[in-house]
Structure formats: structure tokens, C-alpha cells
Amino acid sequence: MIVHVENLVKRYGELTAIDHLSMDVRQGEIFGLLGPNGSGKTTAINCILSLLKYDKGIIEIFDKPMTPYAYDIKKDIGIVMQNVAVFEELTVYENIDYFCGLYITDKIQKDAYVKEAIEFVGLVDFVKFYPKKLSGGLLRRLNIACGIAHKPKLIILDEPTVAVDPQSRNKILEGIVALNRQGATIIYTSHYMEEVEQICSRIMILDKGRIIAEGTKEELKNMISLGEKIFVEVFGLSDAHIKDIELLPNITSATYQDHTLYIKSHKGKNNLENILDYIRKNGINFGTIYSEKPTLNDVFLEITGKELRD
Ligand SMILES: Nc1ncnc2c1ncn2[C@@H]1O[C@H](COP(=O)(O)OP(=O)(O)OP(=O)(O)O)[C@@H](O)[C@H]1O
Image (cartoon, rainbow, N blue to C red; front, top):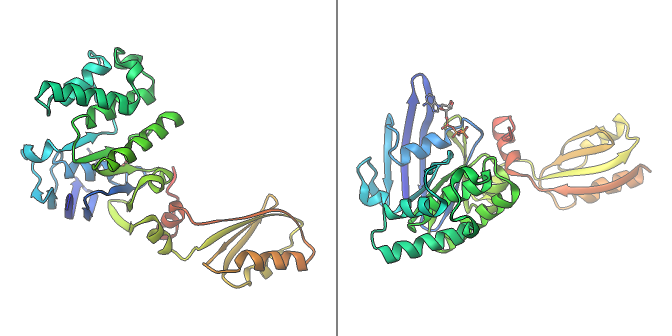
């Protein structure tokens, strides 16, 4: 196992920030830790890395106990934290060179790794820039390059795309997938469900320091009763029509607002057809009609009763 966490408990005074968290991250995974702000993602990462003392639990990395002094483990971990941590006095090149040099002592190898990291995050044109001259997105990319240049086996990224422009965000996500393809195991924390769905092979959803669900995105979506969301642009729908639609097979709810009929249903083969049949038979005027599969937000909503989004 690359990371093994068993019954981790971390309290800040009265607040239990991590409440009996157990997780296993396997070789080659992109493991997503998804949860709203304050759900305990950063605290969990800080405990895993032995940056924070915890109250209870077992943490092993590469099958060895993780401690603040486990330097043999730490040299194979790359960390990209939420807050950018680079030296203002050093250029882009010098920053990456500095962090890589902490791990790689052979100069030729280090120079090659630094060059590779610069190309990897797309900062070739900015090597001589100082951090304060970089945009937010480029600064994040520099932060990532500093964390990964030494080619660690395990890379932990804590919300690396917060407040990043779409171009840099895509570059970062593509980069994470590429690092994984090159052999790194990844732990990725985020409160953006779309990102986690896009890149993670397995996802753990946290709320108030507890695990509320875990699995592949398909497994998570199969855990809930919502199977499909159907939207119909429709004109002049009466309350009686809405009640009738709610009685169709598999339908769990129907609401009508701003000329849009919004229907939630369980999984079923003919949900859309049944609704269309009803609309046609009753001579109701309609425009666009489409259906959507549940999102991870729907999973979170059904389990906790609140939205994952801020
Ligand atoms: N040093 C601290 N002292 C007291 N409480 C803290 C401390 N750090 C975090 N907390 C609390 O612990 C809980 C978990 O916070 P944490 O930062 O781990 O969550 P998170 O999921 O990473 O959220 P975010 O995305 O906002 O960083 C929150 O209620 C937070 O207010």
C-alpha cells in the first residue's frame, strides 16, 4: 500500500476535525479527497505528512510508519500545498533548482530534472522571472514544479487549482494525469467535483471530518437513488399535469419553474419516452428536452442534505 491510514482522529480543542478516518491509497492511483471547505482535507493531509500531531490512529507510507523523522519516506514524496510556498528572492529557475537540489545531489541529474519540470509545467519562457512578476496561474505552476521536480513516487496536491484561470487549470490537471502515467501515485484534494470526476480513479468524499462515501465515480453515483435528471422546456403546464407526471413509473419528483419542468427519477429504461408520451398525448407545447446523469454534487446532496458547492 502506498498510503495506509487507520482510524485517524485529530481534534482542535473541542472541534473534531478528523473523525476516525481510514483510507488506503494503492500504487498507481489518482486518489481524490473531495469535500466542502472545512471538511478536513488539509488537516488529513497534514497528519499524513506528519506535519501535524494527531490524537489517535495509524499512518503508514510505503508500508512503513510515518513520523516527522522518516526522511527515507519523505524523500519519495512530493508536496504541493494550498498556499504557494516559493522564495521571492529567487527566479523561477532558481526556485525549482533549490527544491530539486534538496533531494537530488548529482548535479547532472538535478539539472536534467529541473529542465524537465520547467518544460512540464510550461514555464520555459519565464525561467528568469521572479515570482511576483508571475500571474496567479503561473505561480501555481511554479509551486507544482518545485514539488515534483525530484520525481517522487507519491505526490500530494492540496487544492492546487484554487483561484487559477481556466488555461492554467487545464494545464495543471493534464500535468497531474501525465505524472500519474509516468508512474507517480497521486493524492488530490479539491472541493471542485468536476475536477475530481475528471482525473481521479477513486474518490473519498469527506464531510465534517468523516467519510461519507468512497469508490469510483460510477460506484458513488450508483449509491444514491437518483438515477436521472430530466429537463423539459414546456409551456402552460398545470398542477394536475405535474401530479400526473409524478405518478409515471420511476419518477420521484417533478417541479415546474420558469418554463422548465425538472424531473428526478430512479434508473429506468424508458423514463424520457414515458414523459414525452404524456406530453404529446396531452397536447402540451414543449421545446428542448434533455436528461443528465447524477453528478458528485447529487451524491453529496442525497447523503448529507446540502450542496457540495460553496
Ligand atoms: N489550526 C486550527 N485550529 C483550529 N481549528 C482549525 C485549525 N485548522 C483547521 N481548523 C478547523 O478544522 C476543520 C477542518 O479544516 P481543514 O482546513 O482541514 O478543512 P479543508 O477541507 O481543508 O477546508 P479548506 O478547503 O477550506 O482548506 C475546520 O472546521 C477548520 O475551521
